[in-house]
Length: 102
Image (cartoon, rainbow, N blue to C red; front, side, top):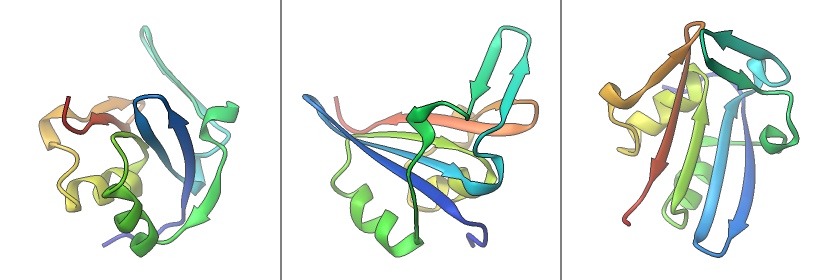
């Protein structure tokens, strides 16, 4: 069950809606491991706090998902968007990108 706060940014593209879902407690931080980097201070990650119900409703409209953090990934798994074997970890921070369809 998701307990932490989630920050969501909605981005419209010619190919559909992208939802960027990030755990609030890691927003603004940067993580590096080898050649991999997550820079959560970038404008791309900035959004507004949303609840699970709103995210579930919007997830049915979105074609792309960018999920970062334990809570965001847990929600993605719960909603059937993220396969556990496709989760990338950078400094123990889970991250996944999902394309629906296509």
